[in-house]
Every structure is written in structure tokens, then in C-alpha cells.
Length: 198
Length: 96
Image (tube, rainbow over all chains, first blue to last red; front, top):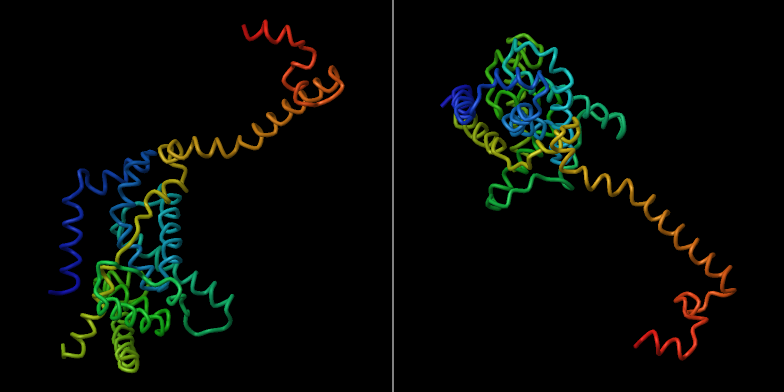
């Protein structure tokens, strides 16, 4: 099954489990209905957290940044016109804030090419996962952190989050052709990093 | 798609279903949701008022000790209990 199809099925499931459509919730949230806004947060928090965790690796920082994503969305709620799907809009904010955080860390740590996460201190802990699954996840996360920031963003959006090339281009503000070439280069690099790690 | 690409896709998809802790309540609290504020309101009020209430209580205790000292001339146990001028007969009468 294609990644975009999987994404579509997930979104459909998400929407069908709601009592109200997203558009209605956004309208209510704009009118100051905090419960409607909370419902929007609950609907999208997993997606935002996954994107930010993929970008930063450190789960505690990812939590803080994800909160900032929704706070920023809340503050700009009046300006949100619904031109793009809410998930795409929030992912764009998540990627931008993650890149800002990476730059901030780089300034603090020194002039590094890539963001070195605190993966060792704050890894993602899943008690339901087997030791092998945990090891695989950490290995992939570690490999992801070794990619340049732009390449990582493309891998996270296209291959983990399952966005289409068009959506990824929209989120990153790049032409579709650039996404294709970046994805191809990022995949090659990731494969070689993983080979070294394995 | 060759097997290497398929393996990579499989590995990356393992990152998708990571466990997460809900941040909804934290977000709502930060944006000033009235229901979150109400939930945390009593605790916040108690924390905010505690130093003032404690200072007021100390002031009252200090004022009472001062008054006892001025009227009784000391702060021994009998003076504090208000029985320094009580005679044995009065004590018996009091307890009967």
C-alpha cells in the first residue's frame, strides 16, 4: 500500500470517529470555544509529535515544541483560512519550529552541521515494544539524526508521515522536483548510514 | 522498488507509531482555557495566598504574646494559659 493511501485511510478513520467535522470545530474554536480547540489538538497531537520527534529525536524537547505548535496555531487561528488541510498546516508549523530549535541548539552547542539530539538521555520509551523493536527504532532515530536537516525533513514527511510529494513540497515551500531529488539523495545517505550502524 | 528500498521503508515506518503522551491539557492550560484554569484554580489560589495567610497568623500569635507579656509581665505556661492568678480554691470550683 502506498504511503499516501495509508495517510488517507488514517485521516478518514480520524474524521469518522469525530462527532463534528474539522471545519465545524475550527469555526467554533475561532469563536472562542476552547473545547472545540482541544478536540482539534487531540486529533492532531500524535501527528505533530511524530513529526517533531522525527526531526529532533529528543522526546522531551519534541513535547515542548509540539505544544508551541498548537499555541502558535491558537494565536493565528483568526488568520487560518483553511486553504490547506489543517494537518498539513500544523505540520508546516512543526517543521519550521523544529528547524528553529535545531538552529538554536547549533548556536548553543557550536557550529555543527547537524543537530545532535539528546537521544541518549531522552529516548522514546515504549513499554509495549519488544527489545528488538526498541533497538530498531533507536537505530533508525540515530541514523535520522545524522542526516542534514533538510534531508531529514523530507524523509520524515514523505516516508514516515506519508505525505505526498505535492504536500511535502507545500509544507517545505519547495518545488516538487526538488523534493524528489532530495528524497532520492536522502534515502541513499540514510541507507549508507544504516549500513554503517548495523 | 528493490528489497533495499523496501527494508528502508519498513524501518522508517517503525518510527510512525511511537508512543506519545497527550499534550492537550498542557496546551489548553497554556492558552488560558477556563476549564483548565478552573481545575488548577484552587491549587493556584492556595499557593498564591499561603505566604500572606501564614504571615497574618504569625502576626496574630505575636500580638497575643505581646499582650500577655504586657499584662502578666512574663510568658510562662500559666500566663499563656491565663491561670497565673487562679488560686487552688478557684481551680477546684472551676473543675466542679
